[in-house]
Image (tube, rainbow, N blue to C red; front, side, top):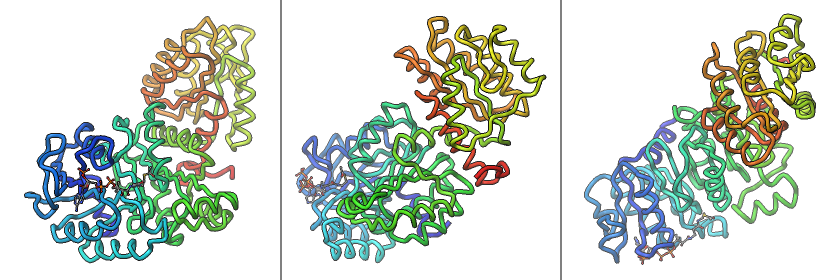
Length: 464
Ligand code: ACO
């Protein structure tokens, strides 16, 4: 790891955090960050800095970072832009290792000189600088929520990097609602110093991160990004939502974060060459990330669909063909095995149709059979809600099959139905089985896992 990247450990695993511009007023950014740090349970020292205050949220306040008694690894800066150079100088003199500049009012509004000035101060003292123009950062293992976003982020294995502040904050809340766990959230804003390539390299070595997901409007140094991405994607999947695909969108990106969106075709080609998985929207990106962060890579190309509904099976079959997933051609002996879990009018071909009268035992038996057969490398289980089966009991049966199988294999599930289905889906998700509300989304997620596994060399590429 490059030395300047290794320094990011002070950002994500700091022993102590100073909040410069910690406010006495609830709802102000500088107050909410102290509150998030405290209430999310940050384990290290918390030092609010505010020349006017004595105490904030029970923590002793310091007039300047220079007055803080112990060492400071990370400083979160939330004072108006014009004061940032002064407090940054103080951070440098204090020996702070990394800073995150929340303040807006730099390059994004044409204040290029001010942005250059803060970068040069940070470099003079060897500090890494995140931002400016950001909502903060989160890192689950150190219980660090140094952001003014929602507090109760779920810990997990997806590192989410966002160039957009508002969208990033909104997605923090959305991931909680969807039950998606994150290892890290990093608001990169203007990327004046720390940029995507640094974070890719850092998170590629982070044991808590299994997938890296980036919302990007533009990169500063395309060549560097590609060089790093090429190496990282062989080790961990990298998903990018690159906004500004259209001409109008590119113009909107330029006025949002000052990003040079560049030609979309160039980005597309660069992503393909470097193994980056490009998602068109955040729903798709997180659908993929859930599968890629939870499931093992497949060892071969053969997929089976197990369903209780012919229609869902046909939709999934179409989606498999569109996404380059290969449905296993069933042999006589395999069909005989699956016949045991269906009535005589079921179909043991692929899709394996257990019929509308399938109960949880039929699903459990068929899924376990598929998991234990070495000719099958991936499973799509579809369920259309019928009164015969309780979705929660079905979820328990699928979880039992998954946990008792001889080996873990990629398994995605789709439940279609009402509120009862949602409860079953949440159970599956919590048990580490990615679950989706439509057959197509389940197929797209599994297909992306296969695509990455081919790229990273887990299976030989038969399909492009
Ligand atoms: N050192 C430490 N604290 C100081 C100093 C100093 N030198 N000088 C002033 N302070 C204190 C202030 O007294 C104040 O505390 P108080 O409320 O107890 O009096 C606190 O620091 C904050 O200073 P304010 O002048 O009140 O500034 P305010 O909180 O209104 O705004 C902020 C600061 C949030 C950084 C603002 O300038 C800003 O840039 N806002 C935009 C942030 C943003 O949008 N980020 C982008 C991504 S997020 C997104 O897009 C949704």
